[in-house]
Amino acid sequence: MMFTGLVEGLGSVLRLETESAGIKIVVSPPESLLADESTATRCGDSVAINGCCLTVVSIDENTWAFQAGRETLSKTNLGRLAAGDLVNLERSLPANGRLGGHFVQGHVDGIGKVDMIEREGEWVTMGFQVPTSIAQLLVPKGSVSVDGVSLTIVNAESTRFTVALIPHTLSATTLGCRTIGQMVNIETDILGKYVRQFLAIAP
Image (cartoon, rainbow, N blue to C red; front, side):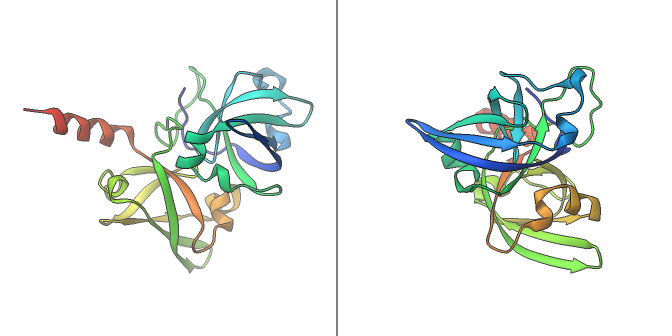
């Protein structure tokens, strides 16, 4: 499955149910994702929640349910969700869909922490602390997914990076309500991963 990092809408977490090997997350999607019968979401479909690809395991009239196992909970911020939290939702990219953003797999590399929020009018520059293993894959003007949002990196340092957020991104995604110290899901550009792997095994 593939995503673009262009969030389709904000969902609201209704409840979390503990299961033997993880949790069930029940989400109320926005009306815009429920209204179009031609692209209706069905059981078995892939949906990115805060950038993490999950499978829809059940649907009723106004909710989607997903299951997240221990590995997913350890590598993402989904285990920190609570009822009432907003989450970014993006359905997988159809074969004939328009590609904006960048190729996002929905495979979260790790968690970052918001360490800076600088406002300039309606714009925001936001900074994130990340593990060195993630920072090594980031380059200025390169792409990164933060909570499933496709963003362009402004500055990349040894353990952090910054992005510039336009008013639309702030209003249409959870980044507009993030505060200092909160955790976010980070997925680096797949091209960087392949290059690092190639260099690691090259003679």
